[in-house]
Amino acid sequence: MTFATLGLIEPLLRALETLGYQTPTPVQAQAIPAVLAGRDLMAAAQTGTGKTAGFALPLLQLLTMEGPKVAANSARALILCPTRELAEQVHASVAEYAQHLPLTTYAVYGGVSINPQMMKLRKGVDILVATPGRLIDLFRQNALKLNQLQTLVLDEADRMLDLGFSEELANIYRMLPKRRQTLLFSATFSDDIRLLAGQMLNDPLSIEVSPRNVAANTVKQWIVPVDKKRKPELFVHLMRKGRWKQVLVFAKTRNGVDALVDKLQGLGINADGIHGDKPQATRQRALDRFKSSEVQILVATDVAARGLDIEDLPLVVNFDLPIVAEDYIHRIGRTGRAGNTGEAISLVCADEVNMLSAIEMLTRQTLTRKMEPDFEPEHRVPDTDASGQVVKKPKKPKKPKTSGGGGKRNLGKWVDSGEVTPAEPSIKPVRKVPVFNTGPRKKK
Ligand code: AMP
Image (cartoon, rainbow, N blue to C red; front, side, top):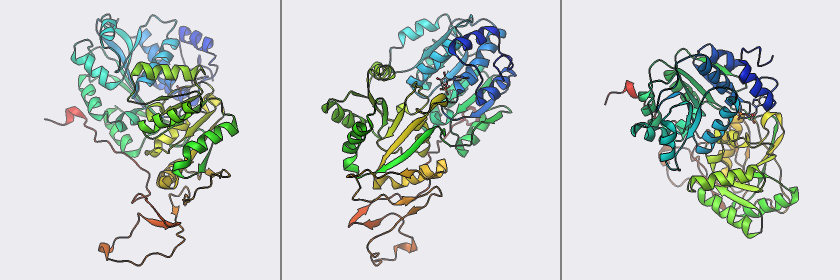
């Protein structure tokens, strides 16, 4: 199969040739004809499988072939993304695909001045890439009208809902024309989000090109059990031992990012960090410098987990496991992209056993454990497997029950090496279910 057989027009084929895209990826092979036929879409694809081109190419073609010229302060297609970095990246791809077409494209997001964006929108743009908050601001300030909108794309739709954008999305839906094409793209879809998404789409075609919630099999994954307090030391040890060149590291919190960056910089290691507290310009600069290999280690919160395309990134390290199991797939999806191989190493302490269990259950695999000599943890990480079982082996006999406790089982604590290891009351995958307000349905 070629892009030509999918029915793409010559200026797009020329752009793809320049980019070296020879064969459509599976998601592209399915999505392109469906979008060209005007269908609504709900597409689940692994990260790094080419879903941006899957929606952008047919969208560009439709906008070129059909519809009126864009009016002032208007957009004909809107691509919503959960983070600013992703909006920038999606826009860069769209602009590349559109290089031989008479279409205008632009990206708007928060954290930077709104005025230049308002100026740019005056003449209207054919394709607008946006984060939800800034889009609403621009709309409320009359810098943008959406009555000409033909197509809405939600990229990383589940993430947008997870990030608490459900209210913004409901507001945006109210601004949109009822007749439009809607495309939902995401690497992961929980059942609740599928249900909610189903309410927004019109007779959608569902595309699932890979088993759900499975990371790309080009990524070699394993964990290193370690005590929490020794994680920084282990990281530096592994880095030196493995002669790591370019590593994207995920930490759970903003403070965690800062602390690790400080520690690494203190050791003379070329590291930088990005998280939501940093100004957008600083975030983008750190990312650009990492992409161009000027920075060796980039430490990030999950702001960097989704969608970012870093060419040939060999290694992702989870300094902390993510709280939401699905984020694990997104994080490690930064490596092993476009058929390359990659490695993902997670430093796991006893406190994180329930997160580990949730990840193994979600990805339907038991992650290999590699003990690092001299770093064997004092607080053992209990055994886990893909069934979601945490095998707890208390070394000491159980304490006799002191009270009835209402007949409930004590699921939370167990005793090992004399220390109480806090555990979650449940070992189910952690799943956030957003309260999604579909707007017009609910009368205020
Ligand atoms: P995405 O999943 O959209 O972020 O794309 C991942 C990477 O694959 C990007 O670097 C794209 O430029 C690249 N890519 C997408 N489609 C193709 C294709 N058909 N052939 C070669 N590379 C591609």
